[in-house]
Structures are given as structure tokens and as C-alpha cells.
Length: 557
Image (cartoon, rainbow, N blue to C red; front, side):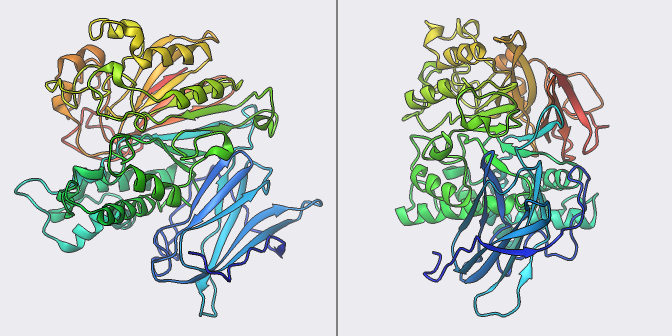
């Protein structure tokens, strides 16, 4: 907790003119500053997030057992345009600290930095200056760039039967999320680094590190959205990570495990979280499904360590579904009636409101309250609209693999009634069918999802504005593509052919790992790029000649 002596001083100003910065210019990782955060003082890097276009927050995680004094300096311009820093001061901080600030930026970017010391120390240390893009932009003047990450599945690095990871240091790094920063340091020293020996047990972590390294050096997104299935496994991978069986843990152990994995999420994103807002779409492996024993602590610690827009911004009190607004034409118009302009991103929760494992496509639901919230949110008159969820609310009638018909996993790009005619008696009872119509009637351009670990875009319909509406699966940075999935009958029917699994072929109907999707949004167009983010041969259908940073496929809408 923050101690009783904590103080907030929003009236203190210090004159300070930061160096000129170009937010579109690639930068290099700072060798003077402990990379990617000062682990003597913090559990992870600070995390910046916009809760709405004029309200931001920076979260700081002191190292366990430390009591810190913290100051945050936010660049401002006064009435005569002299740059200064507004100072927020806190004392005796020994728990997660959110520093909210409202209406302290009016430009397309702002600068901040953190000073810190142990409460009993006399010397202040400082982070580098952080330059952050804001939602206060105009699509008439600047494009918006958004990076979409899906299904990194870091817990799949867990021990496989008969082949455990022996190195105790690596086991600890794997469990705590620090494996990503371990590999980032190695990639920083040698961009051609490839794990060897026992490190090969952590290839998903390596691929995630490779992607974050490339994003840090070569991208300047406005924000990142993680489409889910991120870290923890939340149950079925715990034993392989060296923890207890998920069905044999006590309530206290369950809480402790979930807390550790939520903090690990912050460690994973520490290279980019101080300057790039990161948002989360909850997936089926993120611990918050309605029928999961981890749901309550997983929600509690996500809200504590990974704040998202909530009820104050018109979303859910549990911050599991919400809207993001970027680039409104009329400044704060998103706050008023007659909202219009810019890009709207609506993030849904496809898991929480299913109280049992869905047995058929009709069982999937987002719940009546979330559905009504979606209906109201779609009334915003944006230039572009995107709805993001982890997977379709239906899908073909089988499990993770097609041979298992005991449950419905939400697999596949099935959006319209015609997609379900052979699977259910009444396709109109499949919630995705109703949601697709609702989105089309309200001008949604993309229904974005993950879950299926590939990149592809399928035309769904012609939406209200006359533009095509697409279903976009965003790919994955993970190590191994699911060749067994690609050979399934449903898969081939709905997704097509995979081409060649690691070879020189350039023709395929979809692309596997390792990659991420980037949206480049202007007033008149959206370009969708799938970009390779790690070399993961021989486990992908991405052509062997493709290098990290190369665009595998582009789509223009």
C-alpha cells in the first residue's frame, strides 16, 4: 500500500526544456539505463495508458520490499508557450501506484520522466524521457498506426513429458516472465542471436522478445492491442511450469500464482510499455472465463497491474470490455452528443459470460449487458470502426482439434448465417450472426480476432457505408505453426491451403507464425500489413526468404 505519508503535489512546476524529439524516428535502446528497467527498484517498467482521449495514467510497480519516493514530470506548455514540467510527488510507495492525469496534453504527443529513490536515500535517480503519442490527432493531418498481437502462448514453453528444462535459472526466468528481457539483452548485443542448448526450451519467449525488439527499434505505433492468450496458461500449463496441479491448489496458492503471472505480464512488455499504450482483449487462456476458478483473482490483479478503460469511460466496471477513440475531428467531441470522427476501437470479452464450456456454436455469448453496451457504443459516428474480440461467437462445432466434437471452441471465420446452415438447426440462434448484422448496420470495417494463430482477412459483407466489412485474424508471434490444424477438413474449407510448411513457396491462403499485424489508418484508407517478427524455421508456412520486418502480405480497404 501507499503509506499514510503519501502526498500528491500537482501545483509544483520546474522549468525544463526537453531535447527536440521526432516521434516517428526510430530510436536505439538506451545503453546507459538498465535495460529495460531498473530492477533494483522496480518489478517492471512503468506502463502508460490512455483511458480516454484526455485522461491518461502511468502505473509504477516498486520492487517487493522497497519503499520509494517517486516524482513524475509531465511536459506542459503554459499560456505563452514555454515548455515546463508539471510534477506529481509521492512518498513511501510500496505497492502498485497509478498516477492519473487529465487534460495535461493538447498536442499529438507529450513527454514525461520518472525520478525515484528509496525513502531513506538522499540521491534521486531518473528514467530516460518518455515520448508518447496521444489520441489528440487529426486523420486529416497524421495517420494512426496500431499494432495487433495475437496468441503469444508463452506458457507453451512449459516442460513436455520426458523433456524437462533442467537449468534452474532459465526455469525461474520462464516462470516470472523475465525470459523475454533475458532474450532482449542477448538480441540487443547480437541481432542474429538464436537460442542454443537449454535456451531452446524457451522459444515462444524468444519469439516474443524478437518481436518486441523489432517494434522498439523500427515501429512507432499509437498503441498496441494484445488479442489474448498471453501469459500464465491459467491452469493447464501450471504443472509444466513447475507449479502445483491446477485442481490441487489452495485458494491462497491460486491467488499467489495468478498475481505472479499478472506481474509477469508487465515484465514481458517492459521494453515498450513506458511509451506505447498496451491494451488487452481477454482470451480463453487468460484466466477470466466465466467457468474458471481463476476468474476472480485474475480480474483483481489485472485491474491492479494492467489498468484498462472502465466504467468512468463508458466501459465495464471490470475493465474487460471498453472503447478506444483516436483522432476525433472535434477535439473532445467523443464526450458530447453527436460524436463523430477519427477511429473507434471496440474491445469485447468473448469469455466471461459463458458460465459453462460451450457445447455447440449456439452456446457462445457475450451476455445481454455487454451486447446492449455494444449496441450503444456503435452509435459513435467514426470515420473507421473496428470491433476486436478473441474469437468468433460461434465457430465450427468441434474442439481445439476438429476430431473432438465434445465442445465448440470458437474456431474459424464463421460470421454469417450461411456459414452455420450445416452445423445448427437455426443459424439465427448463433450470437455471432446477430453481432455481424449489428456491426454491418453500424458501419464496422473490421471484426478483428485472434485464437486461430494465423493471419488472414475474409470479406464478411458490405456494411452500411458501402465499404466491405472484413473478418481479420491477426496472426501470432509464437514459435510453431499448427500444421495438424491446417490439414483439417473444416480448416481447409474455411481458411484454404497453407502452401508449403517451411519452404520457398510464396502462395498460401493464410500465414502462420511468427508475425504481428499493423493497421495504418488515414482519412481515406486502412492498410493491413502482416509483418514477420522472428525467424522460427522450420515451423511455419512463411517463405524462407522472408526476413524479420518484411511484410508478408498487405491488404488495403
